[in-house]
Length: 102
Image 1 (tube, rainbow, N blue to C red):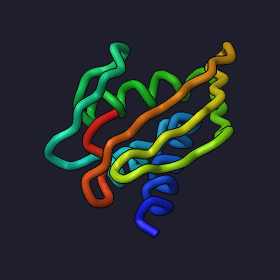
Image 2 (cartoon, rainbow, N blue to C red):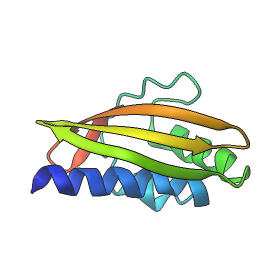
Image 3 (cartoon, rainbow, N blue to C red):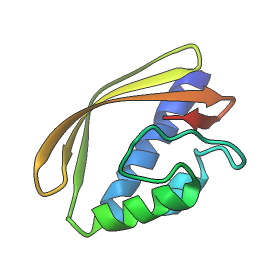
Image 4 (cartoon, rainbow, N blue to C red):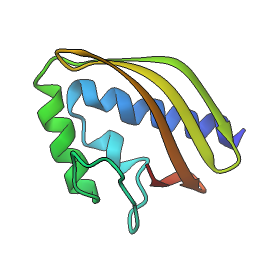
């Protein structure tokens, strides 16, 4: 059951890219520690909020092809349209209901 909750949180987070919604970040990113391996953003919550705000201006669309979990990890195969189509394979590591690494 916890794995499905984690997947739902990540779906909400990534759908926040479409609107720039900072609340989607607050609900899933650990409040005190988070490691971001995306070189296009900073490693803290504010860095993600800034990235979401920038991307939301491109009228983006996020489509989830498949999502699954294994232990503390959530994996997503995604299709992104950020003015150009991109395919992503996302890996998030969780502690309880917060992600601590992407």
